[in-house]
Amino acid sequence: MTTRYRVEYALKTHRRDQLIEWIKGLLAVPFVLYSQPTGVFETNGFSTTQMSEEAHRRYAEIMRDIEVMIDDHINHQLDVNVRVLSKLKLLVPTIGNFFTRLPLEAAFKFQDRKRYISSRRFVSPSFNDVRLILNTAQLMAVTTYGSLRLATFDGDVTLYDDGQCLEPDSPVVPRMLDLLRKGVRVGIVTAAGYTTADRYYARLRGLLDAVANDPSLAPPQRQNLVIMGGEANYLFEFAPAAPHLLAPVPRDRWLTAEMAAWPEAGIAALLDVAEAALRDCVKNLNLPAVLTRKDRAVGIVPSDPAVRIPRESLEETVLVVQKILEMSVGSAGPGSGRAAPAVPFCAFNGGRDVFVDIGDKSWGVAVCQQWFGAGAGGADGGRIRPEHTLHVGDQFLSAGSNDFKARSVSTTAWIASPAETVDLLDELADFMGKKLS
Ligand code: IMP
Ligand code: MG
Image (tube, rainbow, N blue to C red; front, side, top):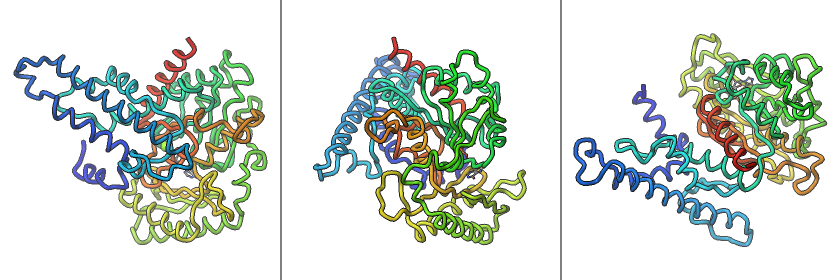
């Protein structure tokens, strides 16, 4: 049930994705002009099929126009001498960089066949329609213009329901094995921060056991799985002989050069400031929460698992803590080239809790790119390049949105549930198969 509160909450600017809203607005025009709501009762010489064909043609044209506009934006991105903003940047000021072009017309046609968007006469193309079209376009791009070498996945909500575990019978498991079988490297890049393998085994048992026991995987393919925990803080590699099938990798073997420069004192100071800010929020908002401090994170979790902290309070807490930390330490991203490294952090609403982690998923994905790219030589210091990487996650909009950060180092797909991840992986397998044949 959509309550009035939910509707109003969604209207807040920090809860809107400007690109998706803009595309939705463009598609609304042919919807208004060509949908025939009265066609259910009278045809006026315009059949249902004609209506949907006309709407399809118009929607597809718009998607092609946006595709061309993104190509132009990419040209602006690549040419450092161009000083003027792209037309897309003027229309959608929050737009970032694209690592691949996006075949939006083809992606629209694909999703229209699945979702019958053009056949609807009462419901216009929605936020979710556009989000799924963008995902499809991104999958088509990473499989068609190049090849997918690394897929990283968020944990909660992406691979399993919030706070749950990846069970052996999860439909995600065989699809991830299929990626490994095809030689794609897989990283689980989760905010869940644990220092020991047993905790990750408990959350990811279904996948780890399957990788260990699947006879069709060659031993080197099993090595193509890593877990990056605490956003960018703990790396575990798959190790068939290790207890819990995971071996922790010491930090000096995987920290990127930029990360190695983060001063320990700065990390501790940042967590101190975050802890004080979280404590203040618990007091001022009277939150039913307790504080938990780890070596690379600090958070608040419900004091009673049966109690939910109100969403407004979680969001308020994230925004307050973020502001306080930004004022006290500044921020940095991979490749930002800052001389004196500010320690980057990620404050986010996890749905039931709020955490502040050292680093964020852009660093976590970058570590996977370096780990699997080492020895590959070539450009980018042996890292797998952004256009050959896909990060799949659910947090692209809520306060702090930790998967959003991955957009600065890889292509991304935005899913809303584990069931959507399954659909996405089927689509991906389909496109990879078509390329091979
Ligand atoms: P993700 O969706 O896989 O990124 O996991 C996010 C969730 O992990 C958070 O909402 C928390 O419930 C949980 N979590 C456990 N430990 C940590 C931590 O150290 N930092 C952040 N999140 C944590
Ligand atoms: Mg998540």
